[in-house]
Length: 322
Image (cartoon, rainbow, N blue to C red):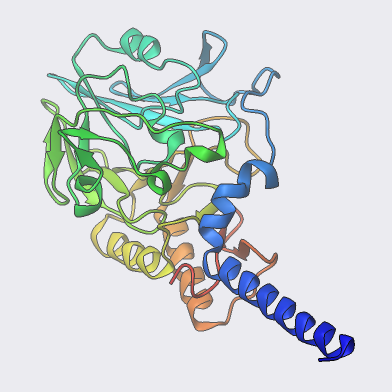
């Protein structure tokens, strides 16, 4: 075989190898992005600047505490780069902390400053920025699904690598005991205050939300929030996003106020992030347009689609996040 033919054959094999690599990268883009995100999107964990609070007050130069009502408190991390908010929901017999914080600072001190009742923590989902602070809590509630049960070994729950996604910040998953498994559709009674457990897949398959029928408050976790909704990481699904959105629109009152897990609203100073059912309808409209091919995205991966003034949606390729 001549040198020219050998070189041509080598070039063909090299091209085929590149095509295979690109194909695999496109196929597994959510996982590849998660693994490389620390390099692709370098970030500081803590902002040294003083937060510009619109509501609430600072505690220990880290926590933003905002009283939504006499028995509901938003606990924000305005200096944390994802600006997480957790919610302390207080009844007469006990309190429930919805999400455990990022773990960048110990959340238990600010929780005990707000209530002397026993506190149960329940994560909206297992991502690192919602379960990072779970270790100090002895009472943990978890939505009862095959996905969450699958992470239990020898009576302890350890989120899997892609349930936790801690590689983004170089974090290892926590291991903890679940003391209260709650089925979707059932309730948690805090004493004089009852919360319904909702299964809200979309952002992740095992995402949970809490609905307080007495106050028409929905605590939505990462299912919906101002700024950019993440629907491109492992476990996200546009079809589940759309089905959940339509279910919520069909079952919740029109005046429901949605308290969410990431700040901030467009044009507003830092405070507990909220949305309305109108925003949920806009999400449904956007998801319908995306799935029909009528909406056009910007960016390669993730692809970003408009929703309304408060939100955009970032998703993967059609074969990644069906």
